[in-house]
Each structure stands twice: as structure tokens, then as C-alpha cells.
Image (cartoon, rainbow, N blue to C red; front, top):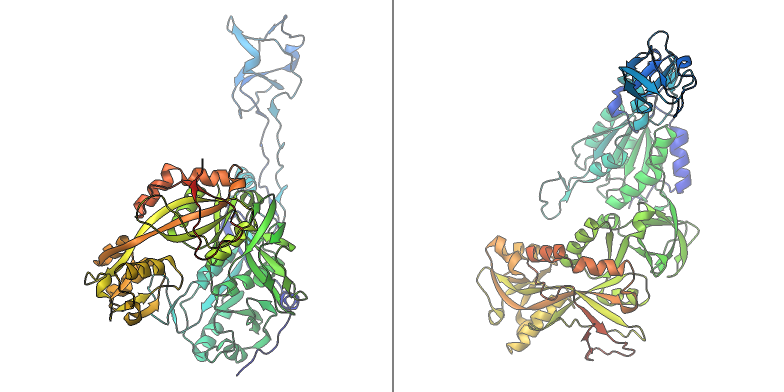
Length: 635
């Protein structure tokens, strides 16, 4: 098996990139309205004086200031030689001041003033702003909206700015374009879109090319063509050491590979080559790896080339919610969801898999574990980098536990009210433990419940002396979706879409089997692949991958499938009762009780008859798997 050519440290990789490739020196002339965020390539000078003559700075009367001598409230002066002017009018000859219209009145056709003015009062002098030939903006200047206004005032409509051209070449025979539904074994190509979104603008022009199959000759041909056009070429995918990773082979035939392998996680397979004296960077195909290399290696290169690319965000001292391990000798970066819980900032770890793009969506910061550190214990205080503003961190609700659409709908309502909800998905028991340890604001739980009465979610974990409460979100009816109208008694010998072990759907299904006395039927029900989303399950049943699956009436309808109800699932948030009156928990309760949230639930097919109800759970120091939980309504 091939191995990486070498493995440099993160610092060595950045230094190699910056020292090996000087700024390309490319510039472009752009209209000033497109120039915000770009860098001036050279100083910009005024072509004429601003203003070009003495003009009025106020509406009023242009006067000789001597004529107003002695004017005061009780002794007004009548002006005999004044000239009416508006703001911006030229000052008539013989006048050296302007009396504001608010400071005079007409009497007998003449202005009367009650306040003397000095020479130059309310006049903009010629060249007060700029003289012809004077510098407006220096070179290497970040252009702001206020600068654009000044340029327009000086009659400048376009200017020379620094520019970098980047060519992006996706590789992989398994790739399909965005908008195409991938077949098994295919992957939608999204890295090039991310690259343009992260790097484009501010003087960077990204050109995304169609993906190239896993063929070293085709990759080599495309890279050779791009290096003659662009200042930097980025290849996505094919940089690892697998049997179909041809990036290194293609680049070796074109130029010199400077390094292959960086001691960073995720992103280890990154490589850098020099082709025709220009940099070519090979990124791993996994989205999180590519994102990290863009942030930690390529943006520093663009900054060294003189472009205004964002620095890392502000540092925030956070308490890590979970224990984390890291390989010694590797700089590792882990995405975090950060919020203020019980008076201190807490960071919950998002999934670390390099392919899990949603960990970026559900995070608002990250922690860097240096190469010399092998990880941190839970509760360790570390400096995390915040990727949003600190004001948003203050408004962030951290929700641990299981996933459910009612939580997604709640997140939209919270966002409309100015807050942010960040879920950190984990097993139900781990979410409850996170709440007990006060490292999240609430824990999401889902449970099978009786068909009548208020929800009574099942909790099978001791929580000592802490008083907890459940905040009910919604109920949903689940049942059998099929093409043939199958009921519970029809399932023996049929194929079903598998259910996640221990899920409430599985419990509802097994309870239905017991109620129908088909206790042994489950042993003869053949299961297909496990799927989680009800829409995905219904599609699979429609396509004939199985005879039936557990879903909802809403998921069955679009596919013309039958739905036979089996039971209800309750979605609830577990909260610390002592904090119910404190923000942001009080705001969370208001959002759940709002008509907007109820409407969103109804439109998505959920039952909201008890939405917003709070139920008290007294301390349970030794709850067992079969114990009854003494719920009662909270007053």
C-alpha cells in the first residue's frame, strides 16, 4: 500500500506555502460599487478639488459678516445686501458668511438677524475636503463603503485592485452534480461550492470546473491547462493513499510535490506541488477536511498575498462538556456548539467524522488540540475560537439528546425571536446526563406513550436530588406503511425496513405485537436495511425494497401508500426545574407555547394538544428500568 511521501507539521505547511510562492501581482480594474472588501493595488488620487469653490453649508442668506455686527436677541439687525442661498450654492461675490434660515425672519421684505456671524460661518471653503491631485486612498487599502462614497464624490467610477484567480478541479468517478439525486455509490460534488463560498469575493475569483474521473492522465491534463490560467489551483479528492487516489501521481508528472501529508486532523492527506512555478494544492475529498485546510492553510496564503481574508474569530474560555482524545503529534480541530449555561460558557463536541458536514452547520466555534496534547478531560477549561459573534453565543440554546423534527421546527421559531438553537445529538441517556451535569440547557427525549391523556415520557436513569421537569413539544402517530394495506397480523413472513435498536418506533412496534398476541412473529419478520427518516422509509417501500416499514401518514401520502396506525410517540424537552424562570429557559418555554410553533407542528402533521405543558418529576436517586415515574402537572 502506498503511504504519504512525508508528513509536515501544520506550521511547516503554512511556512512552505508562503515562502515558496510570492504574491502573483495580478490586478484588475473594477467598478467602485463592486470594490467593497477588495484591496487597492496602488494609491488613488483626486482628479479635481472638492469642493471646487466656496459653497453654502446651510440654507439661509449669504451676507457680509460685518453687516451682522451687534446683532443679538433684543437688538436684531436688518440685512440690506443679503442673497438667499441653499446648501451647496456658490457664495456670491462680496459675501463671506451664511446666516442660517432658522436664525432670521423677514420683515418688510428684508431678513432680520438676531445673531452676529463671523467670516467663514456656514461656508465650505474651496478644497476643504480634497485638493486636485491629493491622495484619496493609499495602496494596499481595504475598501469600505465609506471609501466608495468618497471615490464617487471625486468622480472616480472604477479603480485598480488586487486580484487572485483560483481554479477548482473536483476529482472522483463517484461524483455527480448538485441537483442530481445520487444513486448508491455516488456522491454529490459540493466541495467546489464550499471553496467558492469561503474564498470567493474580496478580490478572489474562483472558477469551478466539471469534475474529472479517477484517471491520472485526465487529472494531469486538466491541471496543466489550469496552471497557465490561474494563480492557484485547488484539486479536491484523490489526495489520499488509496487505490484510486491519483492526485500525487498526476502532479509528480507535471512538477514537484513539496509535501504530501500534514499532521492535522481532519485533513492529513493534503498535498502541495509546484507546477509551472505556481502552487497546486490537493485537498482531501471529505468536506470537513477540505474546510479545515481552506481555513488553516489556504486563507493564510491569500492573506500573505495581500488579500483581506478573515482571521480566526474571537477566543472564548469554555468548559468542555465531554472527554476528548487526540493523537499525540497531530494538531486536531474539533467543532463545538458553545452557549452560556448556568453562568459559564460550555462547549459540546460535534461529531468528529471528516464526512459529517452538519457538524459545521450545528457548531458556532471550534477547539484546537495542539500536537503535544493527547486530549482533555470533561470539564477542562480551554480557549475556543468563536465563529459567530459573542452576542449570538449569549443567545444560544444548547440541546443535547435525540433528533426529532419538532426540535427542528422549534429552532426556526427560536431564530425568528432572535435566538439560536444548536442541537448536539446523542443517545437519550447521554442527553439526560448532560442536563444533570448542567452542560446543556435541555435534553431532547422521545418515548412511546399511551393513546389517551397527557404524555408521560419514560426516563430510566437516576438523577439524585435534582428536580427535573418535562416540557412537552408534540406527539406523533406512527404505524405501518405499505403498498398492500398490511396490518400487524399480516407481517409474519414479510420484509420490513429495520428500526434502530431501542428506538421509540421499535418499542411501539413490539408493543403492538404483544397486544395482538403475535409475540413470536418478530422472529419471522425479515428486516431490510435500517433507515431513520420516515420519508426515506416510505420511498423504500414504494420502490419495493421491503413490504412495509414504520412511518407516519404524512410520509405515506406522497407515495400513495397505506398507513395503519400502531401508537404514539411523544417528543419532550427535559429541563432543570430550578432554572425554569431564568433566561434563556424562560424564552424557550415562551417559544414552545407560541401560536407560531403550534401552527408549524400542525402543518407538519404533529399533535399539539398538550404542547407547552410542563410536568414535574421529583428527585429519583435510584430509578430502575421498570420503575414507575411519579409524574405530576407542574403548577
